[in-house]
Image (cartoon, rainbow, N blue to C red; front, side, top):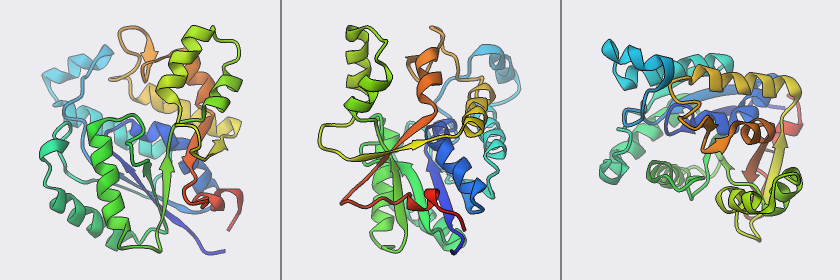
Length: 248
């Protein structure tokens, strides 16, 4: 089997947590992983013990360093930034972003690209913009498969969170589930993969936990429980992550 090359496109430093398991499995199978961060998290916050670093470093410097540390855990073959400004997607020069992404594709020649689904996973404007940019580029590269991270199905969440009170569970379903009828594939991490994935949260200590001791707007216990699963979109009946179940 030929070696695959995955280009992982994240929008902000820490977004890679969502599909870190896919990237770790990719590396364990002997394939390549190349990391591309669209912004440097300039519009984000820096909290916790790292807030003192703001006396000497910019937010972008702090967050991009965290991204680089995260990529080392993921054993990335290359790390790069696209150079777009965080939180400014409404005024991005879309053609410039498309051209820059095309340059990366020309350099890496990926077999697969992984990023968020066309809804940006959580509706963040920057996420949606990057999904649109990715789609426009991939429309010209039918040979490259697009692996899209998406929300979980409501049945899956209700089954895994059976012990959660109904009212709270319904709120989680509302925030984290795809619409009925959308087909997804659950990628389940191995124990060691999940341990590495959870290390990313420690690396991003400028972001987590927040003031309410939450991670990604969810209680830590929920994030810890669900981190071992990643939901991938099956579109037009095509499983673009089929190689994860195979070797070289």
